[in-house]
Amino acid sequence: MIDLTKESSLLDPITKYIKGKGFRLQAPELPFYNRSVDVYGFSRTNNKTIAIELKLHKWKKAIEQAILYQLCADEAYIAMPRKFIGRVNLDLLTKYGIGLISVNETGRCRKTVEAKQSSVLRIGYKNNHIDYLQRQLNG
Image (cartoon, rainbow, N blue to C red; front, top):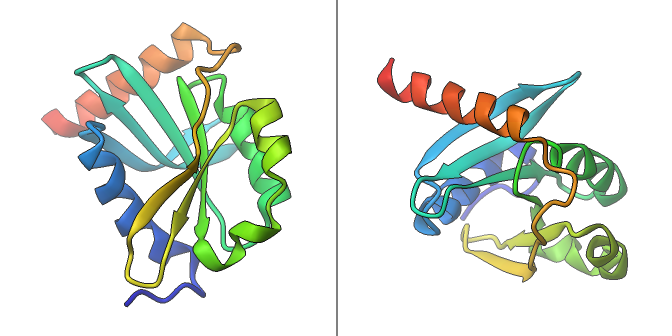
């Protein structure tokens, strides 16, 4: 069981989840503008990047952050405890192309809303972040 009262408790299940989806290169708290992307990942297999904002319940704030992260990632997601997913306006997520991942008490993750390919992605930001991940891997 994981403690779903701490945002940091979502990190391990989410990183394992996206690793299983092919996003092998990852970084937590990746700086972007005046924010930090909670989890940023890159899949060499399909040359895609993913940005995930972890939130316990403040989904409106998470949408604002995920919209910004669409500039640097192919797909942007919000990850939240499953018990708060019912509060999220799914139509708003769909409108902005933001995905949603639920995390339950055992750490199991489930994609509730599929993210769309970002239409505002800036390749320079994406490439800079991929370079960062590769430098971290090579130490």
